[in-house]
Image (cartoon, rainbow, N blue to C red; front, side, top):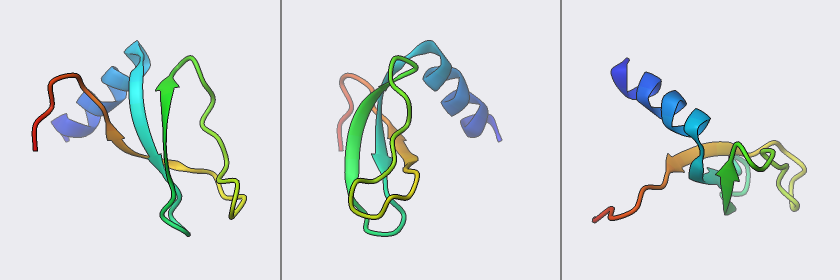
Length: 59
């Protein structure tokens, strides 16, 4: 539960997030809250947040 609250807090503050279309798996990176969450140009379905991108992340 703490992870969901942290995710909401980070997106409210702003920053880059990766969006994904659940239908065709297309991804896009936008800056929240500066930009509105778009619809997928291929499927016309609202995209959802896949990951909050942070500087210095390692895999």
